[in-house]
Image 1 (cartoon, rainbow, N blue to C red):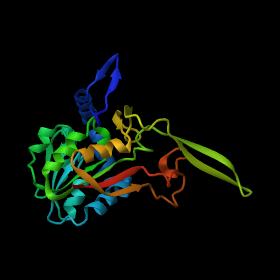
Image 2: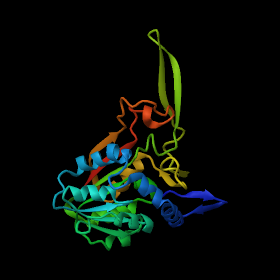
Image 3: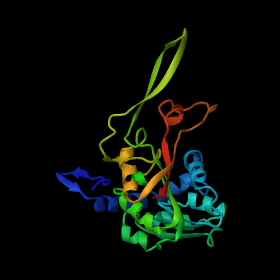
Image 4: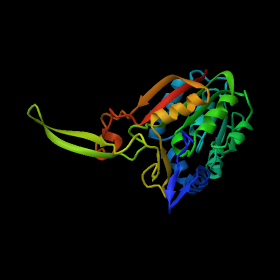
Length: 278
Protein backbone atom coordinates (compact mmCIF):
# COMPACT_ATOMS: atom_id res chain seq x y z
CA UNK A 1 0.00 0.00 0.00
CA UNK A 2 1.20 3.50 -0.80
CA UNK A 3 2.55 5.28 2.23
CA UNK A 4 3.64 2.08 3.93
CA UNK A 5 7.35 1.41 4.30
CA UNK A 6 8.67 -2.10 4.79
CA UNK A 7 12.20 -3.46 5.20
CA UNK A 8 13.91 -6.64 4.18
CA UNK A 9 15.44 -8.64 7.03
CA UNK A 10 16.97 -12.12 6.71
CA UNK A 11 15.18 -12.80 3.47
CA UNK A 12 11.75 -11.85 4.88
CA UNK A 13 9.79 -8.67 4.38
CA UNK A 14 8.81 -7.06 7.69
CA UNK A 15 5.25 -5.82 7.81
CA UNK A 16 4.34 -2.36 9.15
CA UNK A 17 2.68 -3.91 12.21
CA UNK A 18 5.90 -5.66 13.20
CA UNK A 19 7.95 -2.53 12.62
CA UNK A 20 5.50 -0.50 14.67
CA UNK A 21 5.72 -2.94 17.57
CA UNK A 22 9.51 -2.77 17.56
CA UNK A 23 9.36 1.01 17.29
CA UNK A 24 7.19 1.22 20.39
CA UNK A 25 9.79 -0.76 22.33
CA UNK A 26 12.57 1.50 21.03
CA UNK A 27 10.79 4.64 22.22
CA UNK A 28 9.86 3.16 25.59
CA UNK A 29 13.53 2.41 26.20
CA UNK A 30 14.63 5.99 25.58
CA UNK A 31 11.66 7.85 27.04
CA UNK A 32 13.72 9.11 29.98
CA UNK A 33 16.44 10.46 27.69
CA UNK A 34 13.89 12.14 25.41
CA UNK A 35 12.07 13.74 28.31
CA UNK A 36 15.33 15.09 29.74
CA UNK A 37 16.25 16.41 26.28
CA UNK A 38 13.01 18.37 25.85
CA UNK A 39 12.01 19.17 29.40
CA UNK A 40 8.81 21.06 30.11
CA UNK A 41 9.12 23.64 27.31
CA UNK A 42 11.00 21.77 24.58
CA UNK A 43 14.58 21.96 23.33
CA UNK A 44 16.13 24.36 20.78
CA UNK A 45 14.90 22.30 17.82
CA UNK A 46 11.36 22.34 19.15
CA UNK A 47 11.33 26.03 19.99
CA UNK A 48 12.96 27.27 16.77
CA UNK A 49 11.63 24.88 14.14
CA UNK A 50 8.51 23.13 15.44
CA UNK A 51 6.51 25.30 17.78
CA UNK A 52 6.61 28.53 15.68
CA UNK A 53 5.24 26.68 12.66
CA UNK A 54 2.47 25.07 14.69
CA UNK A 55 1.46 28.39 16.22
CA UNK A 56 1.49 30.12 12.82
CA UNK A 57 -0.56 27.46 11.05
CA UNK A 58 -3.02 26.87 13.88
CA UNK A 59 -3.76 30.52 14.59
CA UNK A 60 -5.82 31.39 17.66
CA UNK A 61 -6.47 28.22 19.65
CA UNK A 62 -8.18 29.69 22.69
CA UNK A 63 -11.20 27.62 23.61
CA UNK A 64 -10.54 25.04 20.87
CA UNK A 65 -10.22 21.28 21.29
CA UNK A 66 -7.03 20.01 19.70
CA UNK A 67 -5.75 16.46 19.19
CA UNK A 68 -1.96 16.15 19.49
CA UNK A 69 -0.85 12.90 17.83
CA UNK A 70 2.59 11.55 18.76
CA UNK A 71 2.81 13.94 21.68
CA UNK A 72 6.03 12.55 23.19
CA UNK A 73 6.65 14.10 26.60
CA UNK A 74 3.89 16.65 26.02
CA UNK A 75 5.92 19.80 25.30
CA UNK A 76 3.67 20.90 22.42
CA UNK A 77 0.49 19.95 24.27
CA UNK A 78 1.53 22.12 27.21
CA UNK A 79 2.34 25.02 24.88
CA UNK A 80 -1.15 24.78 23.36
CA UNK A 81 -2.73 24.60 26.81
CA UNK A 82 -0.79 27.73 27.80
CA UNK A 83 -2.39 29.45 24.78
CA UNK A 84 -5.88 28.55 25.97
CA UNK A 85 -6.60 25.28 24.14
CA UNK A 86 -8.00 22.07 25.53
CA UNK A 87 -5.83 19.20 24.34
CA UNK A 88 -6.14 15.45 23.92
CA UNK A 89 -2.57 14.18 23.58
CA UNK A 90 -1.77 10.63 22.47
CA UNK A 91 1.34 8.56 21.91
CA UNK A 92 2.00 4.84 21.44
CA UNK A 93 4.74 4.89 24.10
CA UNK A 94 3.43 4.28 27.63
CA UNK A 95 6.71 5.53 29.07
CA UNK A 96 6.48 8.84 27.20
CA UNK A 97 2.86 9.31 28.27
CA UNK A 98 3.85 8.69 31.89
CA UNK A 99 6.58 11.30 31.53
CA UNK A 100 4.11 13.77 30.05
CA UNK A 101 1.65 13.22 32.90
CA UNK A 102 4.34 13.98 35.46
CA UNK A 103 4.34 17.69 34.59
CA UNK A 104 2.05 19.50 37.01
CA UNK A 105 -0.60 22.13 36.46
CA UNK A 106 -2.33 20.86 33.31
CA UNK A 107 -4.79 18.26 34.58
CA UNK A 108 -7.84 20.33 33.57
CA UNK A 109 -6.49 21.25 30.14
CA UNK A 110 -4.71 18.15 28.79
CA UNK A 111 -5.98 14.58 28.58
CA UNK A 112 -3.18 12.09 27.90
CA UNK A 113 -3.82 8.66 26.43
CA UNK A 114 -1.77 5.75 25.10
CA UNK A 115 -2.91 5.19 21.52
CA UNK A 116 -1.41 3.81 18.31
CA UNK A 117 -1.69 6.43 15.56
CA UNK A 118 -1.23 3.79 12.84
CA UNK A 119 -4.47 2.11 13.97
CA UNK A 120 -7.53 3.63 12.29
CA UNK A 121 -10.05 2.05 14.66
CA UNK A 122 -8.17 3.15 17.78
CA UNK A 123 -8.06 6.71 16.51
CA UNK A 124 -11.82 6.78 15.91
CA UNK A 125 -12.46 5.92 19.57
CA UNK A 126 -11.45 9.51 20.32
CA UNK A 127 -14.77 10.71 18.87
CA UNK A 128 -15.84 11.61 15.35
CA UNK A 129 -16.40 15.30 14.66
CA UNK A 130 -15.00 16.33 18.02
CA UNK A 131 -11.82 18.27 17.24
CA UNK A 132 -11.19 21.75 15.92
CA UNK A 133 -7.68 20.73 14.84
CA UNK A 134 -5.37 17.74 14.73
CA UNK A 135 -1.63 18.25 14.95
CA UNK A 136 1.27 15.88 14.41
CA UNK A 137 4.73 17.22 15.17
CA UNK A 138 7.85 15.23 14.29
CA UNK A 139 5.96 11.95 14.24
CA UNK A 140 5.11 11.09 10.61
CA UNK A 141 8.70 10.03 9.92
CA UNK A 142 8.49 7.57 12.86
CA UNK A 143 5.39 5.79 11.54
CA UNK A 144 5.52 2.79 9.15
CA UNK A 145 2.15 3.82 7.68
CA UNK A 146 0.53 7.25 7.72
CA UNK A 147 -2.72 6.88 5.78
CA UNK A 148 -4.70 5.61 8.81
CA UNK A 149 -3.85 8.84 10.66
CA UNK A 150 -4.90 11.08 7.78
CA UNK A 151 -8.03 9.04 7.09
CA UNK A 152 -9.14 8.90 10.72
CA UNK A 153 -8.35 12.58 11.26
CA UNK A 154 -10.73 13.42 8.41
CA UNK A 155 -13.50 11.91 10.55
CA UNK A 156 -12.28 13.18 13.93
CA UNK A 157 -12.32 16.79 12.77
CA UNK A 158 -15.27 19.16 12.72
CA UNK A 159 -16.42 20.26 9.27
CA UNK A 160 -14.27 23.39 9.42
CA UNK A 161 -11.35 21.67 11.18
CA UNK A 162 -7.82 21.31 9.92
CA UNK A 163 -4.73 19.13 10.27
CA UNK A 164 -1.32 20.70 10.96
CA UNK A 165 1.85 18.65 10.64
CA UNK A 166 5.57 19.25 11.10
CA UNK A 167 8.00 16.57 10.01
CA UNK A 168 11.60 16.13 8.94
CA UNK A 169 12.22 17.65 5.52
CA UNK A 170 11.92 14.74 3.07
CA UNK A 171 14.43 16.25 0.65
CA UNK A 172 17.22 16.91 3.12
CA UNK A 173 16.62 15.49 6.59
CA UNK A 174 14.96 12.10 6.33
CA UNK A 175 17.38 10.17 4.12
CA UNK A 176 20.57 10.14 6.23
CA UNK A 177 22.45 12.93 4.40
CA UNK A 178 26.15 13.57 4.85
CA UNK A 179 27.64 17.02 5.49
CA UNK A 180 30.84 18.22 3.82
CA UNK A 181 33.23 21.14 4.30
CA UNK A 182 34.82 22.70 1.22
CA UNK A 183 37.69 25.16 1.54
CA UNK A 184 38.58 27.41 -1.37
CA UNK A 185 39.23 30.92 -2.56
CA UNK A 186 36.74 33.53 -3.78
CA UNK A 187 37.56 37.12 -4.81
CA UNK A 188 41.03 36.82 -3.35
CA UNK A 189 39.84 35.58 0.02
CA UNK A 190 39.89 32.19 1.67
CA UNK A 191 36.36 30.82 2.11
CA UNK A 192 34.76 27.77 3.66
CA UNK A 193 31.49 26.40 2.32
CA UNK A 194 29.26 23.75 3.82
CA UNK A 195 27.26 21.37 1.69
CA UNK A 196 25.09 18.29 1.94
CA UNK A 197 25.20 15.07 -0.04
CA UNK A 198 21.95 13.20 -0.71
CA UNK A 199 22.24 9.67 -2.04
CA UNK A 200 18.56 8.82 -2.49
CA UNK A 201 15.19 10.56 -2.43
CA UNK A 202 12.38 9.03 -4.49
CA UNK A 203 12.52 5.53 -3.00
CA UNK A 204 10.80 5.19 0.41
CA UNK A 205 13.10 3.54 2.92
CA UNK A 206 13.27 2.63 6.57
CA UNK A 207 16.52 2.92 8.44
CA UNK A 208 17.82 2.84 11.99
CA UNK A 209 18.76 6.36 13.04
CA UNK A 210 19.49 8.49 16.10
CA UNK A 211 17.02 11.26 16.83
CA UNK A 212 19.57 13.19 18.90
CA UNK A 213 23.24 12.86 19.89
CA UNK A 214 24.07 10.45 22.70
CA UNK A 215 20.74 8.64 22.65
CA UNK A 216 20.75 5.28 24.46
CA UNK A 217 19.36 3.48 21.39
CA UNK A 218 18.38 4.39 17.80
CA UNK A 219 14.90 3.90 16.35
CA UNK A 220 13.21 3.23 13.03
CA UNK A 221 13.05 6.28 10.80
CA UNK A 222 10.87 6.24 7.68
CA UNK A 223 11.89 8.24 4.63
CA UNK A 224 9.15 9.16 2.16
CA UNK A 225 9.36 11.65 -0.70
CA UNK A 226 7.13 14.68 -0.27
CA UNK A 227 4.78 13.46 -2.99
CA UNK A 228 4.04 10.30 -1.01
CA UNK A 229 3.30 12.21 2.20
CA UNK A 230 0.97 14.67 0.52
CA UNK A 231 -0.76 12.10 -1.68
CA UNK A 232 -1.69 10.11 1.42
CA UNK A 233 -3.31 13.25 2.83
CA UNK A 234 -5.05 14.05 -0.45
CA UNK A 235 -6.37 10.50 -0.72
CA UNK A 236 -7.87 10.87 2.76
CA UNK A 237 -9.84 13.95 1.68
CA UNK A 238 -7.59 16.88 2.55
CA UNK A 239 -6.17 19.74 0.50
CA UNK A 240 -2.95 21.60 1.27
CA UNK A 241 -3.72 25.15 2.38
CA UNK A 242 -0.33 26.38 3.68
CA UNK A 243 3.26 25.16 3.60
CA UNK A 244 6.44 26.23 5.46
CA UNK A 245 10.12 25.22 5.40
CA UNK A 246 12.38 26.10 8.33
CA UNK A 247 16.07 26.05 9.21
CA UNK A 248 18.10 27.12 12.22
CA UNK A 249 19.03 30.76 12.59
CA UNK A 250 21.96 30.70 14.99
CA UNK A 251 24.01 33.67 13.82
CA UNK A 252 26.63 34.78 16.29
CA UNK A 253 27.09 31.40 17.95
CA UNK A 254 30.78 30.58 18.19
CA UNK A 255 32.53 27.21 18.25
CA UNK A 256 29.89 25.51 16.15
CA UNK A 257 30.37 21.88 15.23
CA UNK A 258 31.67 22.10 11.62
CA UNK A 259 29.95 18.85 10.64
CA UNK A 260 26.46 19.58 11.91
CA UNK A 261 23.31 21.39 10.86
CA UNK A 262 24.63 24.45 12.72
CA UNK A 263 26.29 25.66 9.53
CA UNK A 264 23.49 24.78 7.09
CA UNK A 265 21.29 27.76 7.83
CA UNK A 266 19.99 27.95 4.24
CA UNK A 267 18.90 24.30 4.08
CA UNK A 268 15.58 23.57 5.84
CA UNK A 269 15.40 20.77 8.37
CA UNK A 270 11.61 20.57 8.63
CA UNK A 271 8.48 21.10 6.60
CA UNK A 272 5.13 22.18 8.03
CA UNK A 273 1.75 22.08 6.39
CA UNK A 274 -1.88 22.89 7.05
CA UNK A 275 -4.47 20.57 5.55
CA UNK A 276 -8.12 21.52 5.12
CA UNK A 277 -11.08 19.22 4.52
CA UNK A 278 -12.06 19.40 0.86
